[in-house]
Image 1 (cartoon, helix red, strand yellow):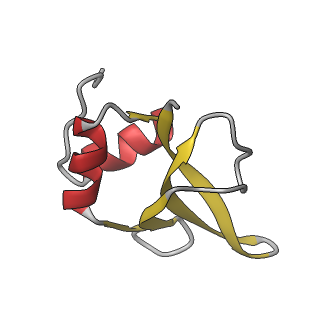
Image 2: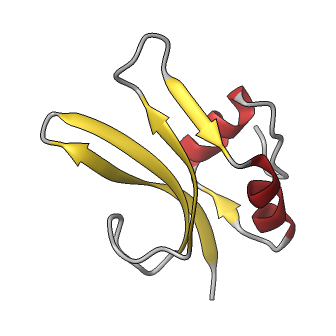
Length: 85
């Protein structure tokens, strides 16, 4: 099972809030996830990003691959991933 760190959409219509989750890459975007790792709210000024850093590092050590957007969010939080560009 390939695990991916990615965003899933929650929140109201026209008011998106995104969760950072660990999920099987085969599951749909808003489908089943393994663990919720944080939250991203682009509606606030500045954008609010909360991440459980220990759990993210644990998943990265286990071989989870972050999506491009999650990689950017983690970089802004000071968490470097192996595949950083």
